[in-house]
Image (tube, rainbow, N blue to C red):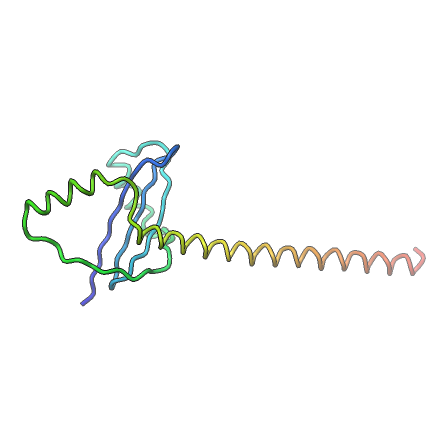
Length: 138
């Protein structure tokens, strides 16, 4: 049975308002962090979700235990109050974001290394061409 859950947590992380999208699919958690800037209104957040959800870059998946929803309305109310008092994001989400940061870091390193090598090769070819021009006596 495929289970899909989604959650958006918006909180203030000095100096900006940040939204963390959490997506659980088949007991795998993936996370995406979005910076809003000024405090977003509810309708602005909803519009952002409608327009940009398919463009979000989610982190690699982390396995997570999915709890069943409580049927007791008082328990649901306590959970809601607990979540509203909670500041920030959960540890699993932090792990997923850390994986995403590391992945982007590796990508940046490989791209910068390739650019550095290409520049080195270009300079070498320029020097070789200059030596050939000097040798020709022109």
